[in-house]
Length: 269
Image (cartoon, rainbow, N blue to C red; front, top):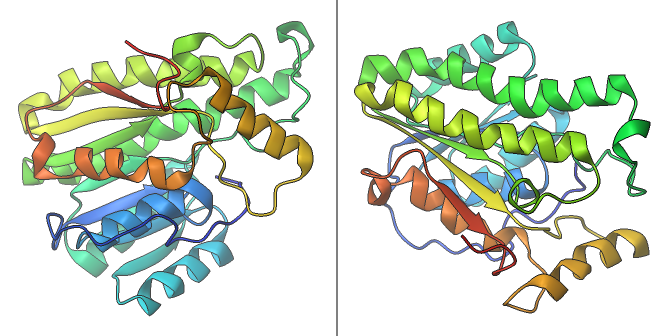
């Protein structure tokens, strides 16, 4: 993710050791919500790999987690390049010896202008970049880790979609389309990897305030989401980490191909 940094410890508590000795790769984990995911999984005992395009941010996140007594490894990773993902897998196996969890979090969103463009005014290059990171990146990352998970006959892949894919927001059609693709990708991958005892599930967050010191327009955009929710407050990264930890844990061993919406009751299904 390319979102502004947040504190990795926000709303994070060490609640159990149900992920003890598991190895979790989180793409886009150097910033924002991805860092919150990494912190929660590490807090439950996992060895986390911070697979992040922004190398310095990944290293900073690694140091932050280690300073809390947690296990972390930073690996500079570009999810649209297969060679980079293969290096991510190689470094993970060298350090930890296995791969149990993949969180496909890396995505383009915060770099989209807040002024929402109509579908026929979006630049073709912007559309292609969105699909490359948000859809192809999840495919390539899953492909890269699947060989090891198949060898182990176990694994958890957790994709991150968005509530906008379920509501059909009338703007940012390339982002919404990419996140809708993740839903179908999740279901199909769950069918293909089920015979190898690999679970594939999806979390669909609502509009989440993940930026530190957001400007007024960003804050207004994030806070506006509360108006449509049954739970009338702004969503924060700490609201999402429990769902990801659940899908990463043994508690979800007989759940696959499913999407869990975490948006305070904005969209109900």
